[in-house]
Length: 196
Image: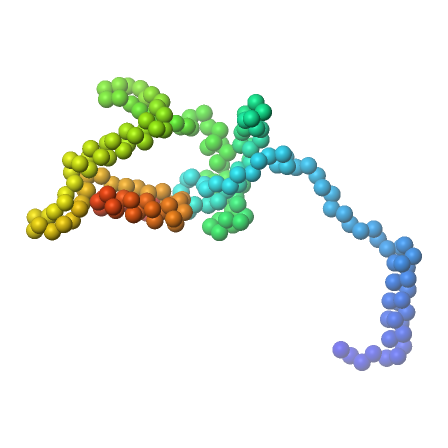
């Protein structure tokens, strides 16, 4: 700092004293108050989820309006990236940004369907029926094709006729449990959506 003369010091002191005196007498500007407006998302319900498109697993925030308990069907009206998610930090790719169209598409499949052998049409079935059918078919295939020992007599416990494709948008814990379950069944063909 350069040296200040006595005259400059008195000018700065007098200006500071005058400015603070004027502020105390009411000549100060009014405090700025942020205006609170009612945005379209204030009455909505926020739900955190994971984008279903690719293997990145971006976090999304879905906003729904309506309440099923009060006879107003709940509907998602807005989707945006989750700023607190460690993967995407609030950003979304073009596919993720178009999730609202994906959800409201009239051709979206909302329940499992089954087509009987020889039939030309798909019929809706319940989730319990679909999962029970999958479990039954897996058991039949494992019982018919499980290899306990190889030609040398060594225990191998292999099931080579069925494979598993895991979802990569799941958490580490779900991935770990899926891997352990599939390997305990003897499946060798195991891959992840991230590599497909």
